[in-house]
Amino acid sequence: MFAGVAVAVGVGGFVANKVIKKKSPPADIIDGKAIAATIRLEIKEAVNAMQAKYKKAPGLAVVIVGERKDSQTYVRMKRKACAEAGIVSFDKDMPASSTQEEVLQAVKDFNANPNVHGILVQLPLPKHIDEQTILEAISLSKDVDGFHPLNIGALAMKGRDPLFVPCTPKGCIELLDRSNVEIKGKIAAVVGRSNIVGMPAAMLLQKRDATVTIVHSRTPGAESIVKKADIIIAAAGSAEMVKGSWVKSGAVVIDVGTNSVDDATKKTGYRLVGDCAFEEVKFVASKITPVPGGVGPMTIAMLLKNCLEGAQRMYAP
Ligand SMILES: Nc1nc2c(c(=O)[nH]1)N[C@@H](CN(C=O)c1ccc(C(=O)N[C@@H](CCC(=O)O)C(=O)O)cc1)CN2
Ligand SMILES: [Mg+2]
Image (cartoon, rainbow, N blue to C red; front, side, top):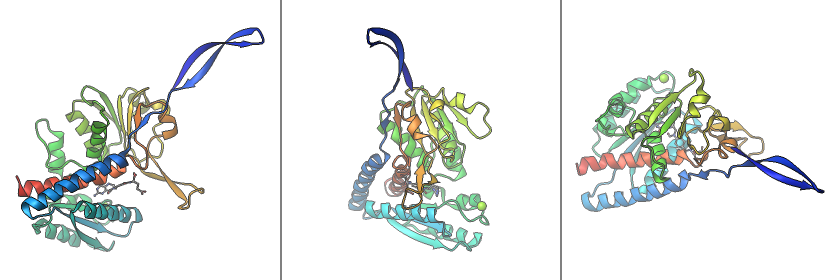
């Protein structure tokens, strides 16, 4: 944001009024990587306490179908995070040619395994597999991704709480809470309406007494709606879509996007950018998450938290 400051400038006895455009100071950075690291330590302590008391560790089944590089990276990160927290991971790596029946069977086997407290199927699945059918086969009490329609339904209802809340939206709320951002009574805009982020994020904000608008690709005047928001969750999956001009001065911006864009200056040939034009938005917002290092690490921390909570419900209901 630019603040117009009128100053008197003297030049060789000549004084003129000149407006100097002064940039607002940049937003505070919400350090998701650091917050996630703190949460992962908290989880590790709780896992140790569970071991000491019940001689049991939480178990997480991680199912991946196919060889997508990004999915393999996320699954590797999840398994490493489990190991560090003392959560036992049960691996099921299946070829892209697996049939829907084979994936269903893997889920059913994990449903029946008493040492498994959480089951996640990495998304997206290969095209020939019906995602919804697989997600609905996961036992409600092990649905650590929170994608089962009954968990989503409870999230949508007043007076009901789901057994599990989807990890990325849960991470967004945790970032707001741990950054002392009040949600109650605030105007919020969620950009994007996906089942795994936008829609549940909107429901969570509403449950916390924010007034929420979901903006999506068919929303007329999206910019002017977003500009009214005190809290913006950008989850459209579109690189740098939310410009500085879309953001109200002082708004808090949570950027869920992880879009890779070509960058010849990088060894990898690409870099990650969010759904917000960070270099513009940071001069308008009061707080903002970076990409990478914002919401992404929280997704994994919340997965561990959900798995721990699932195990705690089984041993100490
Ligand atoms: N079953 C699920 N599938 C998918 C989910 C999910 O929650 N459950 N979410 C996404 C991918 N995802 C986890 O699975 C995920 C995405 C990004 C990150 C992350 O830490 N990103 C880092 C950058 C990592 C990099 O360098 O590539 C960051 O933002 O700092 C973690 C998890 C889709 N599928
Ligand atoms: Mg499909």
